[in-house]
Length: 336
Image (cartoon, rainbow, N blue to C red; front, side, top):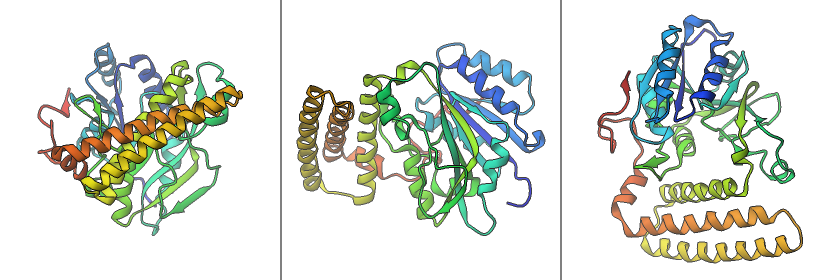
């Protein structure tokens, strides 16, 4: 892009008012001209003082707009924020991120003229609240903690380089054509493939992806994410996500789903056996093996749901989550 596009920064938030203040402050210090961007804070049915904090922030800055999304799920909130946004570029992040001052300025360089780039990401580095254990540093400095570091260079490709919605800029036109994020939850239960689904839809439309290593944000990682329980839950969510994605890609019938369920059960058992063997020998790889048992369990659970319930199959095959008839749409996305 050769001119200065208007950018909408969209932050969904849920019960993290303290962290949200830090995230917002990092954006209010951006070097990008104030007249060319806005900040949309979407309260995702918080039960703490988040609503008051957002109102206070908005009252002190003309750049900040407040929105309410009653459906639980960060991607419902992102979609509502996008629909309310005025930007040519939509930048998505989370309420536990600290942006470098030139983040917006740098990430826009990924929309290389004539490259047909529709989505851009950059480096996501950790900001540890406490010193992480050795096994976290060995196994989790990657997608497991929504981290990404491919170096400082610019990369443009036909494939998603590992985009997370905590650091993603998308052309508004591409986002709207793609139908927005597939939902991560529905009525409080994990259901969809989130940014994975959005990026697959963007790719199917013919857009390309860029990684800008000079656009940097920092992910605040609390002690609660440095535990085996968190690793297990992260793999479990990925199991749901992958079953959803595979169903959309392959459209398996009930027979094929049944065979996949059996395979997931077997693989889960093998992972459990490997976890035991590695733990006995003192190999920290047991942590990943154990987490994989949760992954395969949820693969089997989700495939079973798809095999048994036609409404889940219809849910999984839906592309457009921006239209007024999206399930549970009533009463959401309201300005405060």
